[in-house]
Length: 292
Image (cartoon, rainbow, N blue to C red; front, side):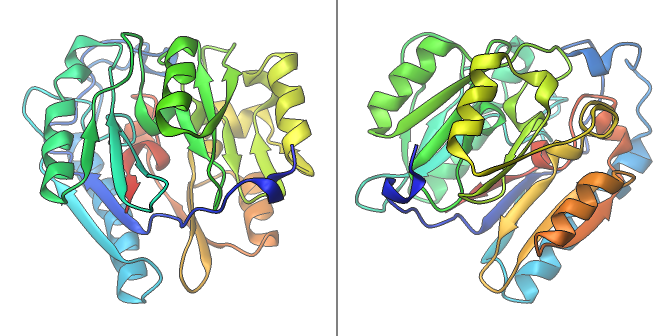
């Protein structure tokens, strides 16, 4: 695929987080949560979240991103802090903001969606329900190519292939499906980062051969991240931002290979500690939502 032929799209430069007062590990929704129920350190989780929020505040203060907001977590929504999953903000063909709300796999997470819908309504977004009746977990499984009207869609664990087909028609936008075949990578945002139109970082173990071939056919450079960093270090759940002044990335610490790649590609890199959230299967990308 020639990405130069895909229409351009402005990157969203407002960041939304959800406060972690009610973050808790109460069950097992992915393999990373096994054995961790009730083992979160609440004070440490608060401190880790604040450190990440402070990075975005500093990037806003410097004029690199346009704004930083957070919504208050709800008491019956222990996973709500992972705010990449409840929605998919986008822009229509006229450049107006719109959002597709999620249909999440687990009932406890379905309770989170109305809070985010209210947030988008306050911004005067056009709000749409998820198409069809299949699963859809927002930007956990929908990863746009930076600056382009092209989306990669992960399916197999939390999002259904039929939903991707319906969503592509709804958005009038190409969605390239990637089947996720490894339980360690239950969302696409755990195993795939398109840095730009030329380069993607991936966990090879997450994809079948056809998915891998699709990625290789799209990007001139595909960098495979070692399994100890991708699966154990959540390196590919880093958040890469193409700011107004310079690109930056926020990544879980102790991922030297991935961090070196990002620095070589010209990113300002912030290394953070998300160990409490990793017990629940998420890191930086899961904990934020970029919106228009």
